[in-house]
Image (cartoon, rainbow, N blue to C red):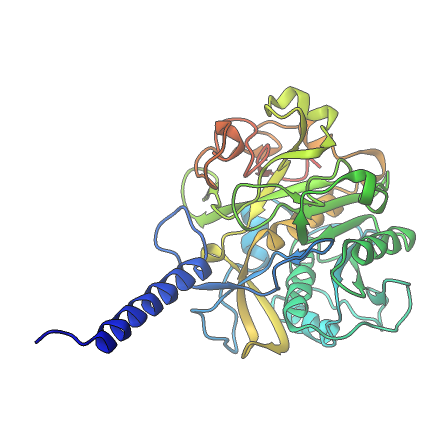
Length: 393
């Protein structure tokens, strides 16, 4: 029977819809260079001009449970050869946008689950302020609330004895997030973790927010594969790339490859780090990333968040370079050396005794091979490698 014009149009419409759904599902699948991807979704809206987006990805194929799945503190410390000791005089600041009204309560659940010491307002370990240093918190945003829980949990996992300062920016604009970084530094933070980014931008516009000598500033490199984002491209920060971290293999007992979602490349605007000259990055300007840690949602971390967002709350599994940035912030705090170093330190102390060199995996295509492909020495997705203890920090 010959199809009627109406039937033909309907069939074409259904085909387009099916293709659209397929493309949408592929776009939302967590990128992975190590086989079939699990389902994951980005929790924050895409950035617009002058704004940033958080870099957290939550696994959507893992039902929130009463008990955690994903890597916990002992896993991360084992993978990166870290002890749980660390000075209680160190303060890690977490800078994010909007308010997480359950941040302290959720942090308590995480720390209790893993036997970490309590970190509360009452015992002086935890403090939460707005970008002006007060308690007029911004409006709640469920996606950024999940990012906040992720960041607090990862800082706790790596440096359980550190104090935590949460500074909530009024919005996701670079101006407000930058003001929150300034506030964190002014309040005595030793390390400031930033798990967000937007389009590559100039330090002449925003660099004053991140230029704090004697304070280690970590920034996630991005989650859309090859390409540079700001503030990871700032001259004043440690840009943190991402890996796929798998238990087992070799004398280390863990295996890492470059995560396909990790951001990398060369800034169009900002000056190269002097220490990077020995790394042969191939970039005239600032090269991204400097160092790396776990980020692939397929090998994700356990996080507790009760601010229900998109129907998910409780124990969740997260990935993204949003994981890696607070992990590296915790390593800086464990090292306790931030007052005497700048962000060139990982380059001047690179080598197998301080970093695990990540030599396989890719985050896309690029004009210079090492900007998007892992290999011996420095490469874009993973920098000089992931921590082997605290010697590189």
